[in-house]
Length: 276
Image 1 (tube, one colour):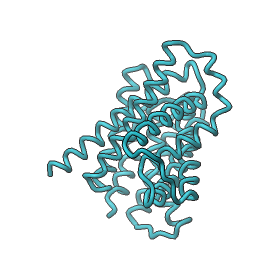
Image 2: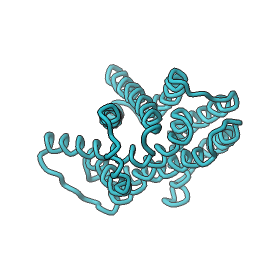
Image 3: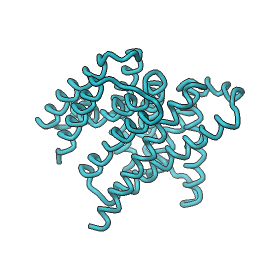
Image 4: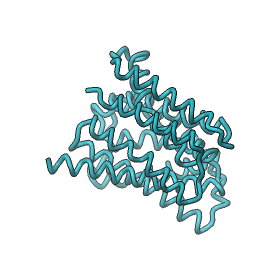
């Protein structure tokens, strides 16, 4: 019981870091676009991840390169679109739409990897689809493209999960994490020219973002060692209200229809997480 509580606590703290990261992205988007923010985040993650790995194990051993390739490709694109969604809309909206990725894990599992899909998952998808519709057309002034990027980040994140599972069979988790950082760093390299616009303040915020996201991923990895996927997944949904509350504190606004859509989506995700 103590280990399970410890695992839940680690996941909960990871969500706090994740919510703070979303707020930092939104704050930085007034100075830089989502591509550069993602590039700098990948740079910090790549640096910290490599140092951590070399310190702990001494050398990097890579197997199943094909799985790592697709994990890196889909995972990095999901993160880039997530940052673009926050840039164009709000931190709360970006997090909410990105967190739909468990549904896409089931959808792609059925369509691409020929996995079974339960009636609970089908019901969850339908409920969440209704919630997403409400969020998309909630009467806010945000461009619809920002919401599209958010749901696409969830879709690509769902595909990435399948390759995370496959790549993690023979690779250490930190190697799987570094695959996304490497691909993301290379994909967004074109935005590196914006380093010329850095100030001490924005540099500090960008480095903090990288450290916060890396810490969040590390805590999440350790947390799932002690709890089941179902319990951990339910705890992970706490990032949604956390981000919404932090967003309100920093002046972000949302319509009543958005909050209704949020409740519907969270309910749908909860139904899905009840699968064995």
